Length: 366
Image (cartoon, rainbow, N blue to C red; front, side, top):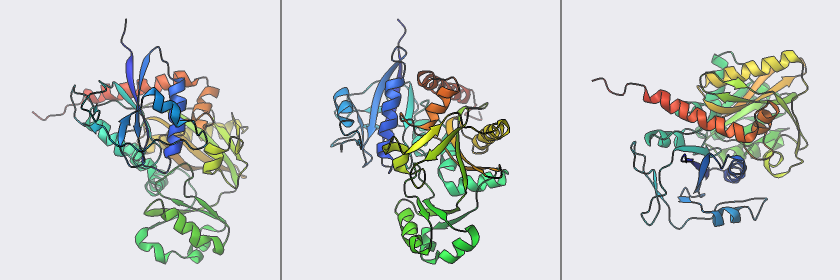
């Protein structure tokens, strides 16, 4: 009998998106083909400690369905980033959890979607799902992402950037003059709409700046785009493909964290989006272009605005998009003919494809 492929599902983490990560991981664990894969659960608590999650702990996580979180681990596993046959993770008592064939990082935001965990996995020589170090890091930093898009002629909303050293010099009048009103203020390095405020006037401005700086040392101030919110999923390595687009119709002030992950009625998801064929084609072309500009691989979700005049603007790209039961990424692929179980299988296959390609590279001059 053929041995099952051992997949390490890596979830939790130190990010403000810890709870979202658990919900995404749960959905992946339930959908993965258990006949083909053996799932190894690796949790990272909010302090950054790693540990193996057994079935009893896993089921307890979701007793509080509104806000599951990993318990604080009193001990943590040793992580061995060594390229070789020895095990990657050692339990606190010195035992090994065995060889892991491939890792599926389900770590949204900081320390998971910013190239840090990807660098560790590369050092360990492990195949992993999703973009490499460069793609994740570039996509995570909205400032870097937007500048790369601008240089590649990818259409984007107007924006301003400030780091913490300029915090006291940020003026409402400059933002209003440059970007108009209302506008959005957000951390440069975070996702899931955490730390984002829609500013409608001067009275909201300082509090919004303060809120964004709670999550990052650099913030983005971005023009408000009046238009439809469209999302499109992408799948592949060097020859990526785009899904059918979908439309987000928020029932909240904007597509907030609660609308995405807490309130199942927080937004209407229209899949596929009811847009003209030429706009569908434009969205799909820009999805693939944005993915390639940032050197992404594996998976991503690209978010758009379509203005009333038909102009299509790229808002951002997420390299580890939400994978919860109400998330757009898997829903868009299901509507495109790839159900979740098959989608997970393809993503793992892309991880193996990349490491096979990398192993063919010459690593020594002599």
